[in-house]
Image (tube, rainbow, N blue to C red; front, side, top):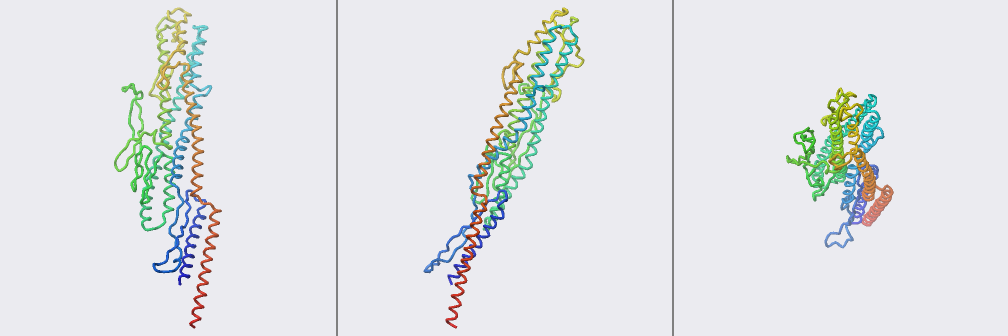
Length: 469
């Protein structure tokens, strides 16, 4: 009887819908779960049959997912990861370099104050010793801050290296899920849970590097960097690693001191692509950009200040004469290859080695005045051009402060955008328990109504049998 078949199909459809509702409710607090729904479709009657229809069927299990909102969520996660990862480094560097007693400016000012004080009595041993002590203190401040930058370089590289194993594992898992989703989808099995896992992995990858995601007709996805290099294509995944190379510390001096730098490489299907680590986005790109555009240039500026100032001071001293009439000697030693000994007072340098005179006359301080004037002379910094020696560190600290404040503002914006993107995703894909409660009641009523129809059909069937009894 069609009435029984219709009611049975209705009861089965209601049961399938109730199963979907129960799955949603069970995963209401599951992170990344995408709610589902049963799409009910009326079954048309057979050809030539005047029946109103053949009941209902579950035509499709819907997955409430919006690819645009997912893309927005992944992009915002990349930007947030980019800004968030570098802020602690910027804050530390800004604090260290702007300290009232620990800055390079303070050390330089103290040194030249000691030279000015020595002008009162150029022959005074205590005043001369004060100059040497101030020079040593200044050198230690240079070394301390330069050491912080060197430690940050190491820390940034370690963080970058620590990101790669997790990133490579996620890429391999996405490729494996692609294969599983395609295989399971062909058999007609629901792939929603597998897709949820894949989207969670992509979100994690997006935090580490900026990505573009393309959905394929077979259910798989392709993931690439924003610059186009493939990370996942179908069932194949790329790997990222760092390789080392040696380059001159100063590009203008190829034969001078060298340093070892890391180069980010992408390996896909035995083809290697060198990547600009500052442009890959996410946490990895944020660290790379900070290292290459802020930290290494900062190190270069500190070296240039130390080198040019020590050269000017040493030249001025060598142009003068000591109290015994002999030529002056160098006070400062510059060593660009040392992270902790960038600047130092020459070993064995004594108060009598300070060449404050020019003609050897006791009390002559004409060369001392040349030393004092150095603070107002220009030096050339790669990132700033010509600046006064006394203003060089202040300008560097000012630029660092602007970079830090700008990154803080962009981080706050990125955090807000990420929160909004998550809310937008939830409005479509997250489980609303109130809505599911309503669905639960509706499908329960549908099930009970169809069971009542079956009961009526049974009654009619029994009555028919009695007629022939």
